[in-house]
Image 1: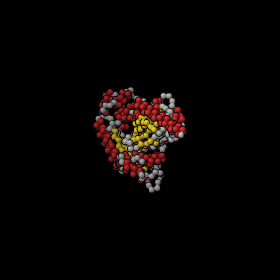
Image 2 (image 1 turned 30 degrees about the vertical axis):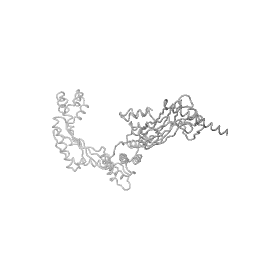
Image 3 (image 1 turned 90 degrees about the vertical axis):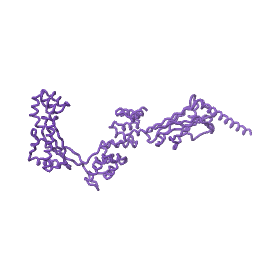
Image 4 (image 1 turned 45 degrees about the vertical axis):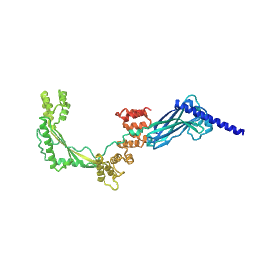
Length: 496
C-alpha cells in the first residue's frame, strides 16, 4: 500500500511538473517567440538534390528539465496538393529525455541525444541546427516550408509557433542556352582551280567590248579538262570577272563593263559551256587596281593621290581632282596602268567530293543528295522534315561532316540522346565538341561538359563553373559576356 501511494505521488509530481512547464512555455511564447530560419541550396555534387538548412532559436525561458522542444517541418507546394514530411528534431530536457527515451527522433547533425541535452541546457538561447539532403522534385522549386515548434512534456504538447517560409530554389540550368552552334557542311567543297586571266585576247581595247579570239574555246576546254583530271574532283564551276579602267565618266564605264561581260558570256555559250556553272563579277571602274599601282610606284605625289583615291567623293570627282592637280601622274597611269585594268578574268574552279566509305544499302550520290535535302529543310526551319531525312542517313561509314550535320539536326529537333551519340563519333570537329558539351550541361553532367566548353566564354561555360563550385572561374567568364538578367543572377551565385 505504501509503495502504491509513493508511485501515485511520483506520477502526480511529474504531472504537476509537466503542466507547470507547459503553462510556462505557453505563456512565454506570447512574449518571446521562437525564431525559425531556413535556407536551401542546390546540391550540384548530387544531381537533383538540395541542401536543407534549419536553425531554430529557442529563448532560455523554455529551458527546464521536464520540457523538451519539438520541431516538426513539412515541405508543401503552393496549393497544398503535394507535401513531404521532413525529419523532426527534438531538444530534450534531462528528465524529459529519461522518461521519453525516444529512439526514432532525428538528432540534428549530432551523434547522440546527450549532446542535444547539453546544447539545450546551456545558458542563453538554445539553437537547434540541422542539415538534410532532399531529393529534388520539380514542385519543390517554388514551394513553402511549414514549421511547427512545440513544447513537449511526457506526451503532451503546446504549440509555441507555426511558421510558413517561402522556398525558392534557383536551377542553375534555367540560365542555359540549349541552342546548338549551327554550321552545316555541304557535300562538295569548292577550292581554287586553273586560271585563264590576262591570256592573249582577254584584254579589251580602250572604250571597246569587242571580243575576237579564235583560240578561246580550245583554251577554256583545256583548262576545264585540266581541272577535272585532279584527284577526287567531281565537277567544275567558272568565275567570270570583267573590269573597266577609270578614265571617262562612271556612267559610261559602267555600261562598257556590262557590255564586256555580255560579250564574254556570248563566247562561253558559243563554245558549249554550261552557263549555270558560271558566276559573275563586274568592276565598273577599277580604282583598287589604280590604288595598288600608285602605292607600289615612286611618285613624289603618292600620298596625296592615295588620299584622293581613298576619299568618299564620287568616282568622277576623284578622276577630276587627280587629273587637275597631278596631270603628269594621271597621264602615266593612263599609259602604263589602265590598259591592264580593261580585262576579262576567267577562272575554272574544281568541285571536290569528300571521302566516302560505301555503306550497304545507300549509294554515294544518294547520301550526298540526302545531305543537301537535310540542310535545305533545316535552314527553312522545317525541323520535322529535316529529322525525317536525317533518319535515312546511316550512322557509320560516312564523312564526319555529314555525320555532324545529322547530329546538329537531331539536336535542333530535340532528339538529344541521338545527337549526343553522333557527336561523340566526330569530336575532332569544333562544332561537335561544343554541342556535345551543351548536351552534357543539359544532362547536368558538369564535369564532362567542362573540358568541351572551356574554349568558349559564354553563359553555358559560366553555368558549368558555378555548378562545379568554381566561383572565381565563373566570375571571370561572366565578366567577358554581355550584360543580361541571367548574367546578374549567376554573378550573385558566385558570391556564395
